[in-house]
Length: 148
Image (cartoon, rainbow, N blue to C red; front, top):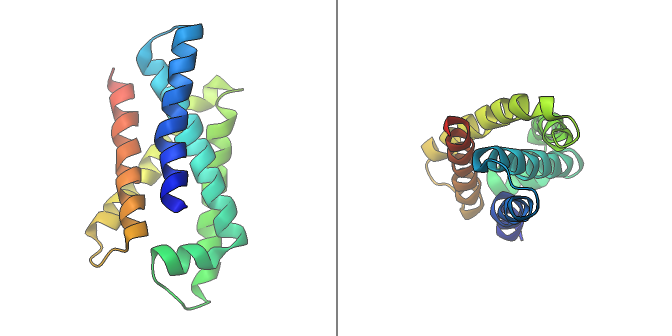
């Protein structure tokens, strides 16, 4: 389920949105990539992750980090609040284009730091490996769109 959600939010939905908008309205590819990867990859993914972390912190603590101590759930919920804030900014970037670059920079930096932290951790679970690859993947996409 986690892998399917990541594939939809980080690959399928952004690519489909880019394709549809390119065919309907056109525009520079880099702008479309930035717009739709920020909306789906930062807005939807971090927003949904934040919602899950706030309402079900044990999932992140136990499934991704293998921490069974209930005390860790408070920290996961605070991470969830940050993810909700980034997610909201990414979602609002469609209605408020001025949010696009700040959401890309803030969300991209979050993904970069989280991805590097996952990469350095020994004994990663399959779920953490998926998180690491998708985190670093969106950083590469956002950086590529920013350079072009």
